[in-house]
Image (cartoon, rainbow, N blue to C red):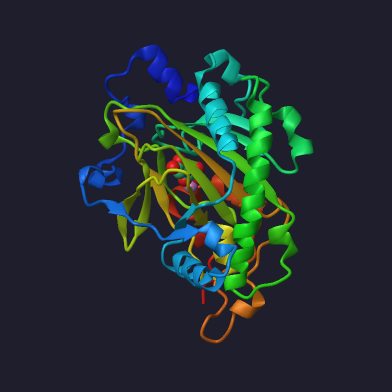
Length: 343
Ligand code: OGA
Ligand code: NI
C-alpha cells in the first residue's frame, strides 16, 4: 500500500494519523518546526543586475552566497511567468490523475527517462517520506519528450517550454558562478550534461511533527533551480541548525550540488536540506536538476588546488552515485563524504 504513494493513501484511506511506516525516530523529527525565529534570510541575487553595470558587485555577493550558504534566492530571473504558471498547473494536474494512470510511470529503474514514485529512495528507506514525485529527463528534449506522460494533455508542451527556459537560465547563472572562480572554457559544465525535472508533491499531513517530506540530503548534481509555491517547507542546514527558507514570489531558490562542490574543491558548498510538511495544505515544488553527463567524471579544477587548499575529493561520476544509492553506505554517510580523500 505504501509503495502506491502518499496521495493514494490520503485519497483512499482518509488518514487522520500518520501510519507507522512514516514515523521517524524521535531525534530525526523536525523539532524546531514551530519556532517563530526559525527562518533564514538567504542572500538574494538580482539576475537583472547581474546582466548590467553592477555585475562585479553581484558576482561578489554570488561568491559569498555559494561559500557561506550554498543557497541563494534568484529574483528578476527573466523566465516567463506564463511558462512557470503552466508548469505548475500541469504538475498539479498530473498528481490529480487517477492512480491507475500514474501507475504506468512507476518504475524501479533509476535510469528510466520518466519515473513516478514515492518517498526518497523507495527501495532503501526504512521510514518512508511524505512525498510523491514525478521525475522527467529533459535534455536533449528530442530524445526524451516522447517518453513524457501524454496526460494531462498540456504536459509535454509545458515541460518542453519550462525546461528549455530553465536550462537557458542555468547557463547564465553557471557562467556567472564560474566567473567568480575565474574558470573559463568548461564545456562539460556549460554545454553538455543532464537536466532532470523533479516534480515533488507533498500532501497535507495530519501530524507533520512526526515525519518529513524529504529527509536531510544534498543534491547530487552541479546546480539546482527550485521553484516552490508559496507554502513553506524547505529547510536548510546552516551552522548546524535548521532554518526554513521563506518563499519569495516569482523567484527561484538556487543551490550548489555535490558535483560542483567537488569541482570547486570544496570552495562552494553543497548544503544539506530537507522538507517539512504541514497540516494545512499540500505543497508542490519543481526542481530543475543540472548535472554532468552520466559517464563524465567530475574532478576538482586544478587551479583551485594548491598548498593551502589540497585536493579534497576523488573523481566520481553518476554511476558511482547510483551505486551508492543502492549500497548500504546510503544510510550512514552522505555521498559527498564517501568521495572525500583521506590524508
Ligand atoms: C529536491 C529538494 C526541495 C523542495 O527535490 O532535491 O530538495 O522544497 N526539494 O521540494
Ligand atoms: Ni534537494
